[in-house]
Structures are given as structure tokens and as C-alpha cells.
Image 1 (tube, rainbow, N blue to C red):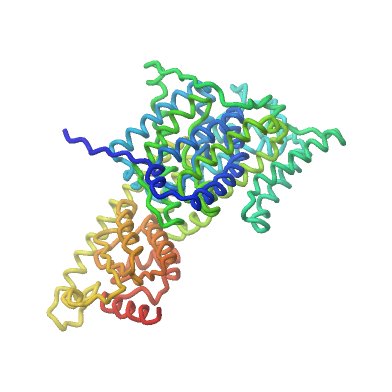
Image 2: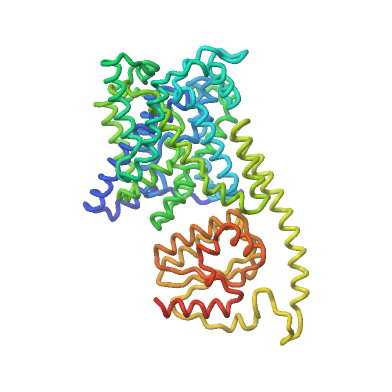
Length: 575
């Protein structure tokens, strides 16, 4: 049996080889800012997950440190995220906090195994439509879980057969309907004003996080109005009691064989979601920085983090896209910024944690509503809906199953639908392609021309300096998107024009469009222009429907390689 060669080198060790005082200053500032940003989010995500607010802080500190210290991305920031809230809430409701700790440790072990056996690339085979669908579904579920605190409902009546808030979407909505007459108008007003501030604040100031402003203002208002006007609203203290001012001692979860068997499916769900979220965040970070993460090393780092987090009373963690983006925008260069973020949160816990008990639940509900809105991905959904019906179907099915049934089931069913539609499309297009080739095999000089131009003429063309030609051989879909990494890497060199030769690309899907968008974003940063050559009917029509032709510039979409070379020379002449 052949085992893959294993070489584990965390990004932190690579970064420290050429570390400087200037880089440390940038990392220190970025890490401190991200730590402040992460504070209200860590508390809010923990509460949304059905655990105490301190668990979110413990997770952000322990897991955030481990993800930066042992992961494969230079700028990844880890901690609790909204994506986990749905799974964690259900696990806690069924198995308790101890069961969640066991499942999280098991998930961490699975993540380490995935990284050790170099399976990081497999996560990229999950179609973009599925990722968009379950992310939107998670957003709806998070928002639904906050309706009670947003309205200030006093939940005293539950559906038949329940003695506490149900974990499923329908059960929550039913419970809210039964208690709708118990609205606290003061809490609702505070939540509504907080939400308005969260939407408006980015237009006022991009550097200071709106969530922090809302928490500070709402807490101050709550204390003042309680002492002066006697107005009361639920706070973290009234709901959960005091927050400890130190990290707990490590405690091993229940790892008996019977418990492991029971919780194994849950551990798989946590591991799959952690892998998808962390690698998706790392890919987004690569697009923003022009860097390249190591997906296998990143999975190992995520695994270590998810083993350590529950030992200290934490919950599952993964890479957080919003906090990672904040880190990059504020100058974070290396994993040291992520470590500083974790240490910042530790200092806040030690010296300011006791004041968190005054934070109103209505304000946290507004923060989570805003998170859900940003997670929903309306632009991506709108683009997919205007694309192929098969993409729309996969998106819709994944979304509905995520909301009404289960995230893991949604991914499984979504993959099944995506595979079915892909196989069907490949069969249909293969038949059309065979007819086209028969039509183009005429004598030289015939009026019938090849779809992608004259092949003999193509191969005789001289490629001018400053132009790189990259040929996409076969369909560009969710399974072949990784090929674009080669083109983008090449475009980072001294080239000014990247010609993507698509004469053999007879099929394109939403994942391919996404790859084109990411390639263009990175090329724009490097001053490289993308030119498409020999694009077929189906890819052309989808690019047109989803607005990709306008982004590339219709003048940069050429019928054959001859026209593409002519266009490349024009671009070079104008640069």
C-alpha cells in the first residue's frame, strides 16, 4: 500500500524566517483591531449556539491562537462562526455540552487525518452552488434563532411535546408565534436602533467595527435607562450569570467507545463544515493578498484548534472570512497577527470580562441579524438565478434542506443533484460536439470553418513578449476550477496579457464563472489583462447571462487565437 508523503510546515515558521520589526508593527496593529472586532462576535455566536457567552471567548482565544500558530495560511483568523451555530445548537440540545466537546475533539482528529493524507484539495470539489445554498440557509437559520431576543419575547409557552425552545427552524417559528403577544417594546426598539446603526455605520467609518459601537452604546443605554427610568431588558448577566475572568483548567471530554459511536456522524458534520469554511476563507484571503495557502497544513491547524478548544470549554472553530478580511485590510502580514488577536481577547477576558454581563441580549440579536444578512450572499444568489436552471435547482434544494432538515443532508443531496446535472450536461454536449467536428472536417478553403479557428494557423503563431497563453482543456466546472490557479500564478510574473484559450472548453458552470472572477480580480491587481480565445456557445451564453463578458470587456473575447493575439498586441501597445 502506498501512503502519501507527509511534510508538515506551519506558515508561522515560514513567515518568521524573514520577519522584521516593520512587519511586527503591522501585525500588532492588525491583530489588536481584529481582537476588538472578534469580541462581540465571539459572544454572540456562542449564545446563538446554545452555550454560555464565555464559551465563545474561550474558543476565540484558544482556537484562534492554534489556527494561526499551526495553520497553513499567513492571514487566516479563526474562531467561532455563524456557520457552526446551527449544528452546535442541535448537538447541545440532544447531547449536552459534554457531548459537543466529544464530537468537537473527534472532528479535530478527522481534520488532522484529512490534512495528513493530503485531502485538502478534495474540498474544492464541492460546487459553488452548494456552498452558496447552505451558506444562505445557515443565514436564515441564524436570523430565525434571534427573533425572540430581537422582539424581547418572554418565552413561556412551547409547542406540544417541548419544554424548551426547539432546535429546528419550524419549531422555533411555532414557538415565537405562540408567544408573540409577550413583546417587550423597549427591547425591540433597542434591537431595531442597533440594527440600523450596524447597516449605516460602515458608510461613516470603515475601520472601527459597527458591532463594537452597537455593543458599547446599547450597554450604556441599558444601564442608564434601568437606573433612571426603571426600563428593563434581558442582559447576558440576567440570562447566564457572571462571566469568568480567566481561562478554565483543561478537561478531557467523554471518549468512551459507546459515546464515540453515537457522536461520530455529528463529528463528521463538524469536520466537513470546518474544512469547507476554513479553506473557503483561505481562498478568499489568497485573492485579497495574492498569496497562496497550504490547504493540507491549514486542515491540520484547524484540527489542532478543534481538539484544544473543547479542552478549555470552547466550541467548534474554523476560519472566519469577515475577521480574516479585517486582518488583511488593517495590515496583517503573517500568523503573528492572529496570535496577537487571541492574546488581545485573553487580556480583555482577564481585565474586562466582568463587564460583559451588562450587554443587552437585544443588541447581540441585532449583531447576529446583521451577520446573517451579510452571510446570505444576495448578489451571488441573484447571479446564479439568472444562470442555468440546473444551478438554480441545486442552489434551491441545498438551501431548503439546510433550513428545514439538516446541513449535512443538504450537502449530500446537493452533491447528488450537482453530479446528476453535470453527467447529463456532459452527455448532451458530447453529442453536440461530435456533430460539430464532423461539420468542420472539410477541405482547406471551405466556407465551413472550425469553431475555435484554423488549428494549423493557430500553432504557427508567434506569442509576443509580455503575453502568456494558457489553454483550458475540457469543461471548466467545479471539478476543474483548480486549473486556474496555474494561470493566476503565471500571471503574477512579468506578463501583461493572459490569453485563456478555450477552444476545447465546451462547458462552463457557476463554479467556472467564479474562477474567472477570482482570476480577473487577482490579474487586475497585477495589471494583467485577460483575453478569452475560441469560446464556445454554452460558455459564451452563460458568461453573457451572468455579466462576466461585461467584466472582462467584450473586446477581450475573441473568436480564435489569431484575433486574440491581435488584441493582445493592441493591449501591449497601449500599456
